[in-house]
Image (cartoon, rainbow, N blue to C red; front, side, top):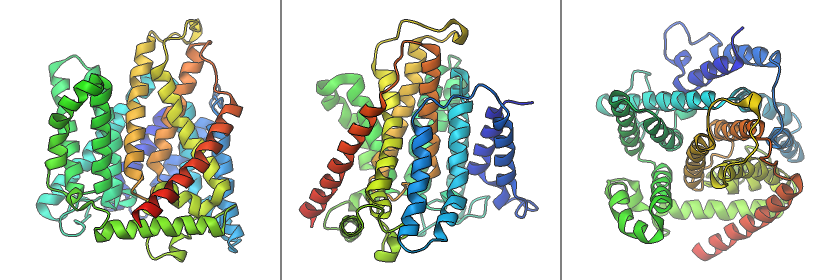
Length: 423
């Protein structure tokens, strides 16, 4: 029987490309549920799964928080609907976090994600030239490219591009042959052009954040001040909706109003929020901020577990790429890779996560499946390192809880201060 990792990759490919939505004869075939079910059955009977990371427990509490939030808002049947909507994402997290259990599988996952997203970018270029892509998806607002399913919004498509850019850079750096270097470089150029065609301000800010951070970490503060204008100029000068980004611009004003309303929802419903998916029941626009959306809809209870889940995932890869190599390597887990190989892929996930959150600060993407895929990869790498180096200590649960509580209240106060200042 094949390893569940293979079936998980197939499922992820179907989630991205979505042939069941545009290939004749496949529209009524439940391909996604069948692929997920096959992956889960294979995974269920596979021994050696590791659940060391606290996120495996946090995700269950996050699901509970979503279900309780809608029940507390008065819609008791909504709890079952939340479970039905979220269980594929939750299952995918467990599949990735426990089956991507070697460094080689991480490399394959990164390469596959880069290729899948490149296909979306090529589709977008075709769409921009013809007005409609091969999938049948049409341009939005006359010029902005999009795709199907979870990528039917240009901002969601831009998020996929943002997290894939560091992965393509990693793939480029790993190959030695000139042909493959040119191939991955062409994929990267296609991706960046696809980002431009989405005309997503959040996506462009995420890309600028990744580029700026890379320049800073590579050259240091002083040299970065000299190099940054050259590296960031093409992104900043390219014609896009970034030119409209101003606190007094109508769209920005509406976002600030939405942030204010989100804070008010938390104030009025501090424990469980207004209920998952109910933000639009209380305000005409969505939150346009992933943090605001979570604490408004799920309250302090749900916000804590969401922050613990995503924050710890980010910290895990930061810790791997930041510390010096552990000493004691388990011989049975010796895959021939040194510590720098793990650090390099951890660095890739770190950039992808930071790019996602830079974009998601201006987008309501708290429940986006791409975020849970990224977190799953971070958790999987952390568990790989824990198995390979026995002296790589676990992060104490008490430390996680205390720091999450601190960040929970600091972030809420920060958002309140930002809103008051901008209003």
